[in-house]
Length: 356
Image 1 (cartoon, one colour):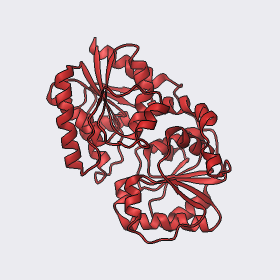
Image 2: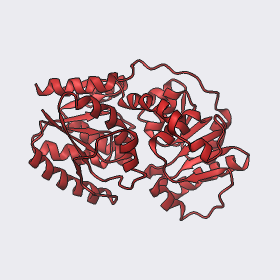
Image 3: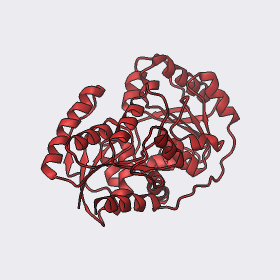
């Protein structure tokens, strides 16, 4: 039994790690890195920290416009699928790598399994939403992290091959928390006190490519830093490029750092007083870690975190961000109906069962 796994971006490296470990006990895995995230800080160090095997193929596609990037991935993935003759192609999440992998496989009549199927923000202006919807409608095995995802697919008429398996990000996070506490020195390097800083991330195109939105977000961050709150802001390369177009003086307490390795990020999340983000993955991790979260969007794929009262959608208006920070409560323990490792085992069990 041969499975080709397609990954290309930081969140996919994290999701792949626990599944790959489980999968390699049962089948031959051919790991393909599209190169969507390609520098060492965004890619290589994740493989080392998460103990992911070296990719069998690195397609080296790199960044670029959606059409060119997806097209180049599609062409190269098609070539290797023809060469490897896999029994199934496994894709993760909602990136261009996800869509290209699914398209290449289905056109060659190779079954597709989609990890994180059924997520919806219902905002078709987000490229991630288009990637999710199309991939789900191409997939044979739809591996859903939540009951809401199953309901979303049912609403689109997709019921065949749909399974509720739990969230592999939960497996990956709890595999890494203790290692992060033991190995990461990021708090010491930046002289951060646990529970005394806000962790911020901004990377989605809807926020970075719209300079007025980005300016509003930065105005809120600067105001918070001026008031005495330390903000740790690992800056995505696309975000840094856009920030260069804005003229602002960075306050001392606004720490704009390069993207950090996964274990550093896990520790920053674990020890934060508050998280402000537009990342879907970090919203979930904040919930599991019991750290209050403010989401810099008007919608989310992880509506469960909002319904629980834990995650607050505030958009990008500076005033709304500031009010949400002021009103944020203390941390708490949040319940989750899955046990550690259960999602990865469920996924691999279904993949192997499907191919018998």
